[in-house]
Image (cartoon, rainbow, N blue to C red):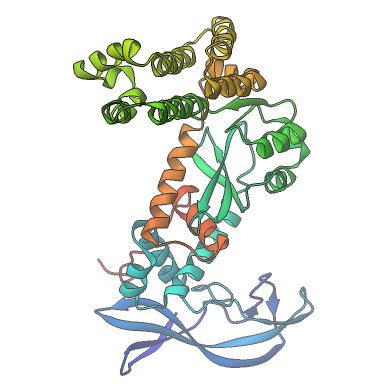
Length: 398
């Protein structure tokens, strides 16, 4: 309730008080009759007509019978220990979803670091009240994200069914992913049906040990990228071996044409690729291997795909192209996981899409100094956290 107000040099100061008389513990909410002391405190609220607005109250410290120690009183307008009201923090979090921390700090007249602390507090409240995010997981995606100029990594877990990030932690090792499965617990691990991931040996090891019954599905685009990289490496080898400058220039100009999808090729591109069989057979052969792998992954019948993929592995090994021989060995090693994509059509596309959004947030923020700050922004923007700026009207107004 509002008791009084006064204008100061910087804005408006409003004296308020809780709707209850007996102090309540700020941690457990227990009523505390034995008051220890009281001191004045201010909380920043929404600006009013361009002026800063603070709420003032003599907050009490009382002996909590449940906590067995002196605790600060609970107030209904702000979190325990916070210097900002719930409404102010919700608005800051909402603005941070839409723009950079610097813009939010300037608009709300707060420090840049304060914006980060408010975001972490809002996210923590949302995670506490929104139920356990790790419940009912069946299909998940695992991927890593780099920050701080690619020197540090964060591992993220995506729920394919709800299209949101449900877990994130610093690092990209098997131990990092093991922490997720430890948080998940053995009972919920047994409910996992499929895990999509790239060909990271560390992630494969962690998933296989924690949930051996779940299907490993290797991301189609990571598998396809192996062939694309092998094709480009083959082209580079041929450029180095070319005799004349014109030959080198012609082969260099083929780079992007070779990587294009068939439906994106122009008539001129098609003519150049057909001419390639006569001009440089190794590159032509590499291009055909890449295209045939794409065709296999486009299929829907797993038995047909298995037969075609085994034939592809044999062709790649007999092609005398060392880069494709290496790809063939990798695909053969992970054959079952590659074929699971054909039958399930699950990939890390949703995970990569969310990672793209996170990279946009990172660029907008000009990087992050700590993993905890990045993880808070990940949950705020990609974790299904819903915040709305508070809109209120005078009570009793008609």
